[in-house]
Image (cartoon, rainbow, N blue to C red; front, side, top):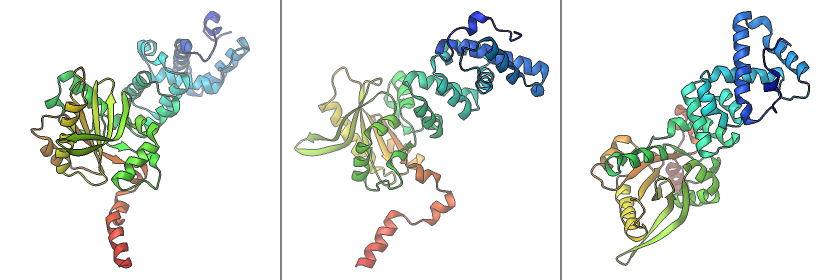
Length: 326
């Protein structure tokens, strides 16, 4: 038929994972023919016609799909990576990787994340659009000084900055308790944003220390780190005093809740904003592992810088409103 593909290969069911080597072979064939015959030779249209005529019972041999196969082969020139990594990812997710990402190293990073975390195509697209690869490892922390090297490296990749709470919508709450309640109302989305491995333990977890009662905003257990993660929410910019509060909670959790087989608890302080050097100074000399990150909503991120500066803060609005009422 002039297609250049053995009938035994193409007779396998189309659209299943084990056909990726065939997709890659077809894509390479198209690339080679286009290189020989030129881009204006309508190689893909002719090949789609030939394949459909030779295998009328098969689906997925349209010109559109052949273009995806060509792009697939061009995006993954190393057949070993295709066999070892890429072949484990559903085809719809493959198309999302091709359409959304141009840089091969970033595309491979997301491909491995799909395999590790079991993301659906929709979750993959959401993570790409949120720039997850830029946010992972972005917290200001003291992990390297407070955790063993292997645990430190893992913790560095578990936490990110900023955390995006766009699922809270345009009417995102502004006060700490309201933020906490909103996250609980969207716990599934919140866990997805935290990342794989987080198990929710409790909200406003009560701790008693020498007759004094303290309550942790949110308590999690991380299955890979094998430790409790204490999350404190702040609806204001970072204040060094927050570190002392979180340090107390971590010490109490280690003494009161931690099992002998658990590793030291880790703290995550989520603030509306933070200055890196101030955080670094606040964490310096601290023995408990802790990270500080910002939390944002998508609406906040999309505002232009010049518009952000011209808008009044919530505090200014409330102060003005109070003045009018008074």
